[in-house]
Amino acid sequence: MPHDLNRRQFIQTGVAAGAAAAMSSSVQAESARRPTLVSKPADALVFVWLGGGLSQTETFDPKPHTPLRRGMKASDLRGPCASIPTAIPGVEFAEGLEKTAELMRLGTVVRSVTHTHPLAIDHDHATSLWLTGQPAHAGAPMLGHTIAEARGPIGDAPYTQVYCGRGPISDDITINALQREVEDQSTTPRLERIPYHDKLTTRQKPGMSRNVNLGLDFVEAANHATYQIEDDARFVFVEFAHEPYQALDTHQDGASKMNVARFNLDMGLWQLIESLETSGRLDTTAVVVASEFGRTIRCDPAVGQDYTIDDRNDFGLHAHFPGCQSVLLFGGPFKRGHVFGRSADAHPMLPVESPVSVEDMRATILAAVGVTPTVGRVIGELLI
Image (cartoon, rainbow, N blue to C red):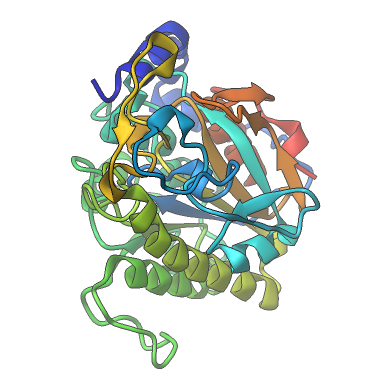
């Protein structure tokens, strides 16, 4: 079956995190009021969510290019695309991310992030583990809620949390549902929904496309996020929406789909980070770029499972892979021009150096914005 590799690895390595993930929201809120772990935390967080399951080897952790050869074994597929140098010496990104590669003088790439929960092979659960710290439907508060409740609004800012996106961030989790959850749990955070199929604010840059194409919506959302930071929002969620079997959800013809997705991703990230730097806001704004999980080949060579790639539909990373993914960090107290962790060059391409759990990434993100985490370990090597 396509996901046997992921399920087996997760059952072996993931059960231990269940108890830690079960921390109640009331305990989280109490701990959030404790002293910060970072001397100069960011004032705000922009969380860029790449819904669908981003292929790490076709974006921020490319492997040696393996061109399509009809009849090749899937286990021989390592890098479906060519790579390019970044501003970090010796570090490469996938071709098509030229602008983001230049931006890495301002950021860190973490190449060894891994889930430790056995349910993380599923879109909904993996998304919820990132955004709430618990599996789907557990009723845990969003990351933005935890930050907003701990730190409150910035001055007289009209909104503490802003969500820029199109709708579903997973098959069963929607931004609107998360809004209701936040509103039910606290009267402190003030929330605004930015619907990108309705009229945008009059501060939108003239000439920005109103096309409903997925990628263009992401560029539009990234553009709007900079205005929200200028208006002193504490937490801004920017969404590259998950559309099943499209864009980043590459279950077939992954290499071709990622060619298009990389262009849109590159434009959106460049616009967001460049705008924050130009406005002088990057030093006080932390930016996290993450997805629910990574991608791998649709078989388990270790136990003799393999398949033949006969055409382009088979060429790409098509299986959910919670075992390893890459995350980008910019601004605030995050290090600049830095790479952390390493994944194996051969399948299953698990972390082989400095593995970082999603729990630890969440803890580090919270610490970066001045909130003391209750679960996970703050990775000091990622912070200035």
